[in-house]
Each structure stands twice: as structure tokens, then as C-alpha cells.
Amino acid sequence: MRDFIVHRPSSIVNWSNSSNMKIKLLSLLLLIGLAFASPAAQPTNPTIYRAYFTSAKQLEALTSQYDVLEARGKDARGEYVLVMGDDELAAKLNAEGYALVAQQHIGMVNSPLSFYGGYHSITEHYAHMDSIIAARPDLAQGVVYGQTWRKTQDPNSGYDLRAICLTKQRPGDCALNPNTDKPRFFLMAAIHARELTTSEMVWRWMDDLVAKYNVDPDVTALLDYNEIWMIPLTNPDGRQMVEQGNADAGFPWYQRKNEHAQIPSTCSNPPTSWNQDGIDLNRNASFRWGGVGTSTNPCDLVYRGASAGSEPEEIALENLVSQLFHDQRGPLDTDAAPITTTGSFLTLHSYSNLVLLPWGDNTPNTPNDAALRSFAFRMSSFNGYVTGRPAEVLYGVSGSSDDWAYGTLGIPAFTFEIGPGGGSCTDFFPPYSCQDSLFWPLNRNAFYFAAKNARQPYESALGPVTLTPTLSSGRVGAGTSVTLTAIVDDGLYGNAAGSVGLPASQVISAAQVFVDVPPWAGGVPIPMTAQDGAFNAAQETALAALNTSGLATGRHALFVRAQDANGNWGAITAQWLSVNWQVFLPATLRESAAAW
Image (cartoon, rainbow, N blue to C red):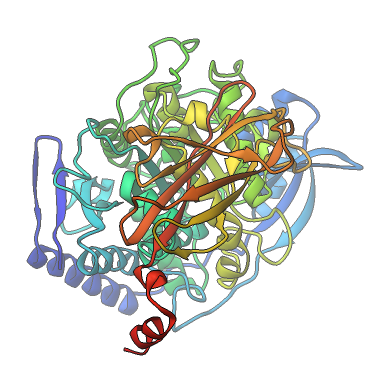
């Protein structure tokens, strides 16, 4: 098994197989102990309510104290947000003057053979990373970048915090150093422990990247020239509490926060959907901490912690990301990140089918708003989600990880809220079948878009999207010609109702193809022409006649990109061309060679 690299603030040491086995043994013993322990009291099954508000002040009061879900709507009664809780919470909200309508009652599901019908446990997620690293050392490295709060209190408890880096490995790749020629895309999940879908999406993307390398030309180009960093469990302490509910109560507990318990604690134990120990790690970031959408009550779901960046999980996350990306933005809120910025960042949450961009609070737009919106709306063209800033399409938040990544380092950073606000695939614990039937098919290409644009995102996300190029023949002989065709589209933006700030499309002005050497490595562009005779629309079919004279036999990479009327080049999309020596043999010899 390939070793993980364990990162500490002052040193880097090897994560050995023996220590790995000890951790797994301790986890097993813990699970056995839980199995024989006296069952904890089972919390009342929660209900999702529509909580109606009539002013921004009422909305802020709701989001600063209660478990307000990532959904907002309007009906004949007025505007509402969704709040999860029990009868006691409903009575409290009614006493405070909020009108409530029960929208959905959450039922119990028992699944003795697996974690809530198929969801992967912490142990399985970590073993999955281990298996990829062991099987594909040419593509994968692992890093232990910190420890959870519980492990900082007791080395026999809690978890190491682990990330995986996927790329075509060269010496020095996946180093904790921002000085690399490979742009980095960072994907994190489950900072809110109960949001089970998010970790499953990371699991699937890991497998997709590894399985498609050297099979799919675009995936191969992505891993050849980029690093993909992923964290499937940003808050494993909290996730263990969620899993424990499934074992003790037959239904996962709605633990959102980490496990930093106040002493003495007055919070509910076991946790309820609106009262629990811990700190909301997505309100604890060290940028714009303590503002709208946060609470100072330790039992509230959006408790921000005692100070900015106080939690070991948050400290470790910020340290890791800061080692992977240069600081590319000035210190003022009005300082724009430059067009040369590299890197991109995505954090996964659930639910409500949203693509969110900075800033999270109610302040004016970021100085990079046009490019950030174009990036976000391009991603929502794949998953169909509502797009905008949190305060525009949901409610204001502060101290979040995406605001920190953009505000501190300048990299474009976004949040996906995965899962609909209603129907059979809603809730934090939707049926496991929803992962493959709905969530993964919708989000796969959005992930790839986010990663492909990491090289120079503030330009390429504004530029046209190149859809899969095709060749008149995938295998030709040297000296013969082949026609390359590609759809290039500058109007590929999501248009879900309720989105804010839909960008205007631009006319395509040019398209190019590069053979074997991409543009950033000094490749020579071959101009493409418009199929209809002129580049004068937002979507065009671009053509190029490629002569294979001088090309060696074997596989060649083609990199295609397009430019809009404002001069923005979109990201490349790759295709393969194979030059086959058999083409030049007489027919009888070709048949003999094929038979042999």
C-alpha cells in the first residue's frame, strides 16, 4: 500500500501501514463498543417547516439561530425558508411570531446491512483512498493534513484529516508548495457532517478520473496537465456522530457541526436537528467571520465558534489550501484578483440545487463578479441549478470556506447545494439510489468544467466552451488528411428560474487546434474556420483540415479552444488522432497483419 504523507505544522512524516492498521483496529473496537453500549435516547423524528418572514430582519433572525436549510421560496402566503425541527421548535417559532406550515415529515429507515441504505462510512471512504493510492501510484498521492478536534484532545479518539491528489505523477507533483506548473482544482465535501450526498460525489469522481485516464482524451489531458485535490470528509468527527445515530437509533442523527463540545454543555445529547454541540465549520473561517448568518449560542446550528478560525479542522483546511495556492489578490475587498490567477475551488453541500458564488453576505459584489458569475453559470448549464450569490438566491452567510478561498487567495470559489428542495431525492439523507440516478449524472460534467478552467479561470470561464471535438476518421495514415469538427459555444449558460445575473453571450471570433503541444506549453495554433463561412454567432461549428505529414505512427493529442469577441479564450477540450502504419500496406498485407 502506498503511504500517505502526514503533514504537521512543523514537519512532514510518513503515514505508515502499521499506524494505518492501528487506526483501523481502534475504529473497529470503537464500533464494537458502540454495538454493546446502552442505546441512546432516540430524538423525535424531525419535520421540515415552511417558516414565513416579512422582512430582512426576520430572515436574518431565522438564519442566525435556527437550522435553516439551503432553500428559499414563495407561495400565496408569502416568502419562506425551510426550517427543520420538532414540535418544541415549532412552538418556539410560533411564539416568536413566525407562521409555519409543515412541508415534510422525515421518516425512519432501518438498514442493518449498510449505513443508511448504502452510504459509505468514514472507514470505507478512507479505505477507498488507500486502495486508489495503492493501485495507481502513477496517478495518486495522499496527504494527512491535520487532525479533528476530538483527536487533538485524545490521540485514541477522533480522526486524521485526509486528502488525495490525482495527477499524472512526476517528481515533485502534489507537493505542499504553490510553485508548480500544474494548475490545481480543489474539491471538498461534508464540512457539514450530515450532508451525505457530498462525500458520495467525491467518491464517484475519484473513480471516474482513475478509470477514464488513458481511455478518455479529455480526462487524460486534465490529469496530464493539472492536479485534482479532493477531501471527501472535511468533518469526520461530525460524520461519526451521524453514523452513530444510524447504529443506535436506526436513523442518522442530524449532526451538522464538529464535535467540539462546550464544558459544561447544555446542548442536546444526542443531537437534534436544531440543538447540538459543536462549531459550524462553515461559519468558522478566518475571513469575514462573525457576520450575518452566524450565532453566538453554542447550541445553535450556525454557532460560529469562540473566534475566527478557532477549530483544528478549519485551521488545517486553511493551512492546506494556503500551501497549494499562491495569494493572488490584494488585501482590500475591492482588490480584484488578476487575469493571470490560477486555481479553482469548489465546496459541496446539500441540498436545494444551487450554484453559489462569493460574497456570501449582503455586501456589494466582488471585484471579479463578472468572471465569477460566468464561471458559475457555465457550471449550472450542466446541472441545471439556480445560480447566484447566497444573499441573492438563499440568505446571507459569513465565515464560509468559499468566501475564505476567494477573499484570502483570490482563487474563484463556489458552493454546490446538491439535491432538490422537494420530491423523492430531497433531504440530507435521500435514498441512496438518488446518487447514481440523479446527482452524479447532473454534476459530473460540472466538476470537469471547474477543473479544466483552473489554469486561467478569470479568462477561460468568460470564453467559449468547446464541446467534444470529432474526427472524420480516428485512424489515418501519415500524409493523409482528416477533418476535425468542434461545436464552440459562448452561450452555454444555465438559465434556471430564480438565477441572478445571467451573463450575456458573445460572438465567437476564432477557434484553434494544437497538435501534441498545448497552447500554454508553446504549441503552434492551427486556425479553424466556421462551417457556415464566418464566425458571427454565439455558437459555431468550427472545422480544420489536418494533414498528418510528419506525424509519427501512434496516438496524438489534439487540443481545441475558441475565443469570443472580447478576446477571451476558453479552456481546451482534447481529442485523440491515431496515425496507423497499416494504412500504407497493400490490402493483402493489411489483412494478414490484422489476422496476425
